Length: 127
Image (cartoon, rainbow, N blue to C red; front, top):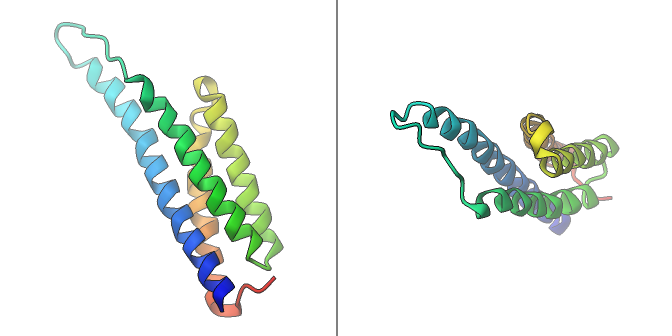
């Protein structure tokens, strides 16, 4: 039963992290769209720490994926979690050209963590 609780907590942390990551990724395009509405053609410059937040989300999601994948007995969940985390990592490292992949990866992590919670409740997670 303790493993179920650990996995569920890591799945919930993973969902929260992915949702916040997605919100973070959506804010940047909105800010860039707003920059064009300025009448004096002010160039929008994001603070340097803004991009570092991506790596914080990546680290949090790694911890959540590591614990969730380690405590589930469902192979397809393990593969899905690591696959989407890898896509997220790739999107963040190559954000200049692959930023759109972060949306797919975040959505995939949210769904996979959620499915894992549902399966744990139904079947248990003992490895």
